[in-house]
Image (cartoon, rainbow, N blue to C red):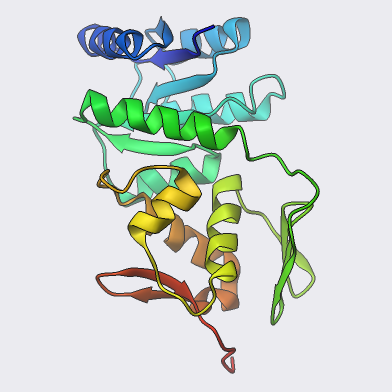
Amino acid sequence: MALTVLIVEDEADFSAIVALNLTRAGFATIVAKNGEAGIEAAHARHPDLILLDLMLPDVQGTEVVRRLKADASTRSIPIIMATARGEEIDRIVGFELGVDDYVVKPFSMREMVLRINAVLRRGSGLAPTGDEPSYTSGPLFIDGPAHRVFLDGREVELTALEFRLLVALVVNRGRVLTREVLLERVWGMQADIETRTVDTMTKRLRDKLGTMGRFVETVRGVGYRFAEGQRDA
């Protein structure tokens, strides 16, 4: 059975083009013309993924995400936010709310299909299996089996993607991971997709880690690494 993508988009011509290309790629599609219709369709049809426009005529895309993530019946549906607004703050807000990916219009249909496949592939493996290892780095403790992170004994609230990014960096402590490698290991995307997703998510992760954020180092022009040694505060 074909996987279903719910397209929440008020521009009829654009949604028709996206739906056509997704159908050709083997997906079933549902189109909702505004936020309220999108929320209703998500509850009624339980799609495998939602492609959500940020700027909608009735309810902002961020509010749609909040309402879907607050409901247990729709919380686990992956969401890709598509918008003409590409400011960093928009991506940060989207990721903070639980969006799985963020793409700026105009985008190629090939890229969109790749992103959808990557999110769906990654989503099938996000749930804890109970056998993930745990890691300790100074005051930072990563509880692998529970998918939880603690700093000085206090839990740090991370999204599933932020958790995967932190683990990838800590496991390879002292080694530089390029953005392309992180895209493949954390997001499940191929390296030929140009995106600032890694930079945005890394910045957000640093902020959440507080004093430990300094250990997530930027290697200019290459990527990121988790510092091998501890520094004095």
